[in-house]
Image 1 (tube, rainbow, N blue to C red):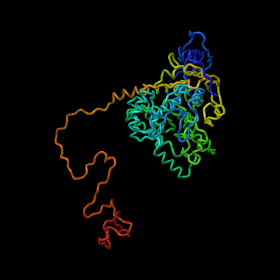
Image 2: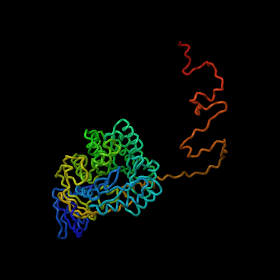
Image 3: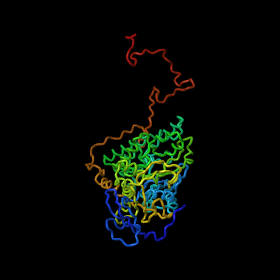
Image 4: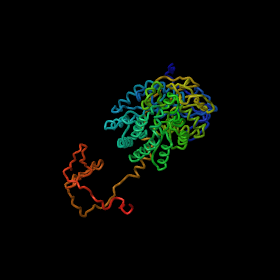
Length: 569
């Protein structure tokens, strides 16, 4: 049943969260939080507040900034299937899990207008979303029109991030030169450049090879996309971004080797940020070898979950030490029936995993309870870092006076068992089925409205808002702008050369320009009286061009290769 619409006076609701511990990304303090008109008005002890406020007792609880999920695919058609969550059911599930803002994807078809795809998404999402949202736009092809539309999206439509793909050959993949130009343009307009890094050419070859070997099941996704293809593309993406002087944000980082490439680049001072997903930090690729096809297929995503069982712990540690900055759900739910389009060919199984509702609790369980991150770092990777990268901070991602009232009351002692039976998100499977999570959201407040409390929703369809994002976020660009100033390449000032210059020798041969150097051609080398062996005139018909030349009956070899052998025999 659709949620009960709140009264028009809901914006005037006053809320006092009393007795809790306020957790930000850099500190924890015992404080009360007073909210009015959708804004956090006061944070501290013994606050002076007007009467009539709803009081929420948070004794023994934590008060966190609402989560920001940086990658969700709602109401999206992909690989001949449409995701089973729209902006209503998806954002409702987000609120149930403690997430108060999502960033969705617009993925234009090849040669489709980016602006038209964006407007189509906005027209559907605005009337349905229950929480604040923003949009990434995919640069799925390249040309002057895309170049112009990126600028228009940034200037007029509130978009500040674009996603480029090095995978999905013949679908979304950009060549290196196109990626370089796209990154240069991102830098010029101050956008966040998100890159999916896998070697698309070798992925296509690997898939063909696996199918030729008779491997058609879900294990083919792991066999055809080994982690070295991600590591190579990650290194290449960082190199291209460095040459373009553009900060790079790598998405869906899934392997230890790609994590190592990122860590090395950061140590070298390159401006690199990274996002992984809940699934990659918790699950491993043995799921693809499960005897039940439906179970194995339900885990198909790209890059795939990795076979090495130590990978999830490693990625969680990278979130802990700031090599990776953000964890998103990359929520893209499909049903088993939809995945069954690939029952005889793993390349036809739609890629994507559910998880918009479970992200916060699962990361708390595996990260905080697991001793990999503390509560402050939890806030950083689920909310604050995303707010900084997408230029929303400190309006979102922090509990301070003046910030948006997107707040979660979190019970660190509470627990719940995840199950598909009681989930709000779409799909007929839950990847974390049976996982007992310690750490659950009790109350979610979005835009100053109480939208979720103890399992009950009071959010209206369409009550969320689109958040226009500003360009040139300091978190990415401040260092880069300064670096360009002090590391600008300059020509050497010198006296011009005044000596003699040799005359150009015109040998009658064609002058080779720069374009010829890219694709060298072999010059003609016919010599008088001799045949060029590179241009053989051997014919399979029997008659040869040199049949008229008399043949010698034998020839004595004076110095055969390897020396004479007459002394031995």
